[in-house]
Amino acid sequence: MRAPVRAWLTSLPFRVIVSTFIGSVVIMVLGGFLLVSQASNGILAAKRQSSVQEASTALDRMQQQLRQSNSDSTSIYERLNQLANEVGAQAGQYRIVIQGPVSGYSSVGIDAATVPVALSVSVERGGGMYLAPTTVRFTDPGVPDEPGLVVGSLLYAPSVGESYPVYFIFPEGKEVQTLAVVQQAAATTGALLTIALTAMAGFVTRQVVQPVRRASLAAERLASGHLNERMDVRGTTELASLATSMNNMASEIQRQIGQLEELSRVQQQFVSDVSHELRTPLTTVKMATDLLYDQRDEFDVSAARSAELMHAELERFEGLLGDLLEISRFDAGAAVLTLDETDLANVVRAEVDAQRAFADRQGTRLIVTARGNTGAEIDARRVRRIMRNLITNAIEHGERRPIVITVAGNDQAVAVTVRDHGVGFLPSQNTQVFHRFWRADPSRTRTVGGTGLGLAIALEDAQLHGGWLSAWGRPHQGAQFRLTLPRQHGEILTGSPLPLAPLDLVTGGPSGTVRGEKP
Image 1 (spheres, rainbow, N blue to C red):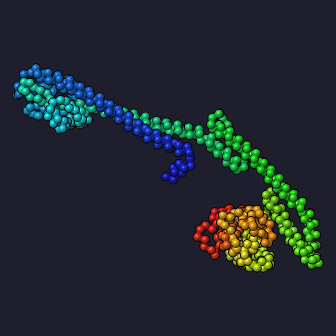
Image 2 (tube, one colour):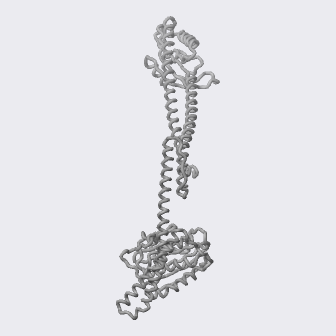
């Protein structure tokens, strides 16, 4: 049943055709039943009416002949047999059964058991004419039984003052054949109409679905970047209006995307130009600031403090300018990798050693552990920059508690986690931390001079490798960032050697949303 169920769920034409077929079958069955029922009732009613009329006529004729005869009680049986033979020979549509005074029933070719007992009791009790259905049984064993009607009444013999039951048997073989023909015609007509309606539904559905499919394909091509894709407009129907609307929408999307691309290009160029133009005055100002900073011991306290603040802010401004240039290269698609087979654990240890003095000044201890084969095809410079951003971010928000850095690898990927035990953040903010200039607490100042672009650049570097950069956090429980890179560049990641949630916590639920992968 999987294939039909899948076709029902995924194919609109199949659903319409099957629904039409089932509906047609139900309607044809109900209509055929009603038609055959009405035909049967009509034929049987006509048969009953004609049977009663013919029986009344035959009974009157027999009654008249019996009155004209002067038979005594000993010869009345012979007279009844004679009447039965005469009337039976004249009538081709029915047979006669007469209950005589001596030898029981007298009949011509009909078994007396054809007469129902209930009908014979009703006829013997009173006058009138009675009708009942029966199964006609013939005295000839080679003739099969068939359904029929029995009309019964009393035949009076004035000469002896007695009455005798007489029964007129009307076989319904022709009526049964007529009903069989009607049933066969209804079944054949219903089957043909069902097939015709199903075929018509398929044809109509095809006419409707084909333009919709073309619209779907055009929409998919538009979504994949083929902005020049357009639909053919044929006629003036609603489907033609759909095609026209799709084309207008595609043209408007193309125009707006063109405007956005142009605006993005202008913004990227503006950021790049401004960044480059700021290099020269920044270099000049930095040289003067360095000179003042080196001679701050000769100044009074206020001037020395001003020189220190100016030097620190210029350092931060220079870092911000470098990050802006790097972001502009990512936005322009100009960033490229310099790949080499490198041990990720060595890269991480080198960056930790470079940051250890800074961590000591902040009162934070860095702990590094590595397990497994951590060799991979990576750009060591960009991976070190990712680690630099993650470590400095952990130091700033780690509340002077130890930071644990773990490196691991498996057959498909290598990964590194940076775990701090500081302020943390809400689970709903695990993707916002990678936004440019985002802060979990806007009122909190940057204590180590970050630019606000570090995690955004780290995410771009990770994605440039084809990897994941994921974040987990809980308020007052700290945060953990996980970098996962493919062991061979170009391979598609399906998992990570390290879990996203810290192993030292039992969260009791999802460990957070991973950017670029499922939780």
